[in-house]
Length: 472
Ligand code: GLU
Image (cartoon, rainbow, N blue to C red):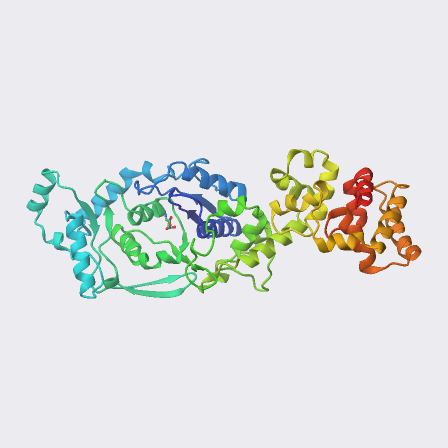
């Protein structure tokens, strides 16, 4: 069987969108699963929307998540260049070919003419499309206009009354009438191709076998199929991924959610959780398992389990997943990633820092919360009046003073001894449960719940433990 070749083809217009990450990830998973090739192609033909540095940062974000490409501007490959602005001649050559064959035509209409046309069609409730007035121009008219240096675009001549039928790997059989397609601009007045021409030409030359992209491109597929036909090329397989939705089922938007991948990483989501979560936006395994490493996804992924129903972006699920990874990734990995949120001196003693992370990760969802949680070990507690009242009660003071004296006899990292003391205290003082534990935790960490006492004491160290017990 022919080796599969897929491409992620972002336009460098800003940050990496969650939807973009999903496409890149599915491309990557599909390529790995089928021993194919995953290609990165930068689609920078819309010069007005290009943001400097966006391509670079997008590549580095994907790399930091573990998604690398077999062929790309950096890695090179046999089908380069992989940046569209470096392939302009190729697009012009095929635009010329289409002109020669009568499948494309020059259009000299001004922006004003076009917007007037649009308004009139809208007013009449018609499908908005170019009315083909320039198709009537004679070769002499065209020559004269070109010689006079008039600005022009080149349009694709779509067939009349044609029903485009194709099989989509996700959506099954799709039929779209040609009347719903405009005579697409192929070459713009600045001489650059539009996405439609450039993508088709590149997908052909780069021997792409599967075009995996968002559902928003489904309605453009007839134009692309038509281009393949006019150029005498074999089209690839089409794979349109379902929309990603806000929880109210509107299209995923900034209004309701953060949509940039970078912002999730900045907030301290773990790459493992983010990838796992995004993988499940439209794909699921036969047994509906939820937790997958990237390697496992590469093993399991298949296009026939991509659903066509919109996938809801549920932040509570991402949070849940992140919590799972916070607790299950190797401790040094979490410690390393949390480091940037910790003040230098809180992490100086690495053994102690690991103990803090180990205790905190049981109770935190995001990386910065670990540092927030660690405050209990470094900063004096601010107690509520109610907590203060609990601490100053006679029973509490009895517990604290007894505990203080016992701890002063042992090592702070002797967990067994601490457990033994804790048990013995309840017996000896005849104080149990809340009345016993609450004052100890309040005195030591300023809150009624938290890690077990041996963990707290080991982290605080003996001197600090005694000080906190005494001064409460
Ligand atoms: N440049 C297009 C985009 O950024 C790519 C669409 C496609 O994959 O064909 O959405």
